[in-house]
Amino acid sequence: MITSELARDLAEVARDKNIPRDSLVEVLEQAMVAAARKKFGLNRDFEAQWNEELGEVELFEFRTVADEIENEDTQIVLVDARKHDPECEVGDSLGLKVPIDGLGRIAAQTAKQVIIQKIREAEREQTFSEFKDRKGEIITGVVRRFEKGNIVVDLSRAEALLPKREQVPSETYRQGDRIQAYVVDITRATKTPQVILSRTHPGLLMKLFELEVPEVADGIVRIEACAREPGFRAKIAVTSVDPDVDPVGACVGMKGSRVQAVVGELRGEAIDIIPYHPDAARFIVHAIAPATVSRVYIDEQAHAMELVVPDDQLSKAIGRRGQNVRLAAQLTGWRIDIFSETKHREMNAQAHSELARVPSLTEEQVDFLIRHGFRSVREVADAEAYDLASILGVEESEAEAVIAAADETLDVLIGEETARRKAIASAPASLPEEA
Image 1 (cartoon, helix red, strand yellow):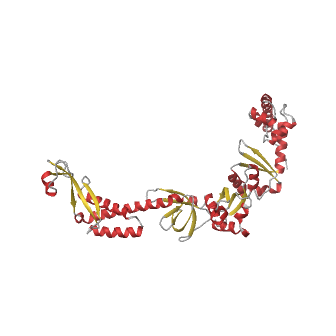
Image 2 (cartoon, rainbow, N blue to C red):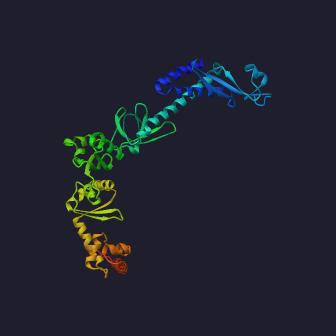
Image 3 (spheres, rainbow, N blue to C red):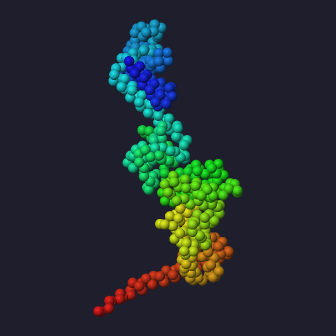
């Protein structure tokens, strides 16, 4: 019988898939209705009900009692209806039991297909429910297979995807390898819920420190900011709510044990742990470590900083291929320009020479402007009067006069530059000496 065969499948699926019995009963009822419609027609009104006493699904077809038949699929004449229910009247809905055995093998296969489809839907919903609240957590799985550069990770009761864009280029995996990753998203995909993992997300680094450092897990030490160039280097800024707890020391651990555990999980990614400071300039100085900083110039409006470092510290401050300054900028959220002491002196000397040509500026005012980041006449000419007045400590009308003078000086400088270029272009080319 179809029913007993489906019942066996039902019991097996319930046990193997760990899906609630009520959900499977509903699936089975829907499967019986689909099978009946496939055999008898889509327009007929079927309903399936689970009979607890018999332990099987009963199938009923409902027809409307009528004097005359207009639709053979949905109606039954009164005479025939009273053979089943002597008390029925015209307009009543009569339920007629349909033998399950009459559905045939094709209908049984249809029923099984519906069951499989519904089971998959139930599994998808179960997976989504299980992982929807785990976004932002670290999860451990096993590399199962590779699909077009993506890694499919077995999470025991579900599969997750580690997209190629979320993989660290220097890391390689083989089938069966254990992998820890950060859950960046959980989506309802067409075929199956997609648990999207990442090995490059800064959250992975932060969560690893939470696992390795009890003070971070307890909230005593806070990771205020994090920046990574996955597989190469990372920086984290930490602070402590307890003045007796050194946040950097807590994250480093005895003889570096804690930070080395994180480095090991990230397969050798170097990690700089720096103290966070609410003052932006001090924070930048910490962030650019291991280089030392001589002076910091801040442009609040442009949200940029200019760092001056000793000549022998320049390469260290910039880092290999600019890595150190890039990470410091990511960590602090400020744009950072770095200059050596020598280069900065040269720039200031050139700026002083140019700004000194504005007739309404005193030497002291030129120095003020340079300290506030003005290095050309054009920048003064383009400035707002109220900004310039605040920097120079003058009335706004005086600042407007300075801007007007800078405009005139700029025209002179442009004229000089144009004449210089014409002179170079018209100069005769030197002929090679005869042998």
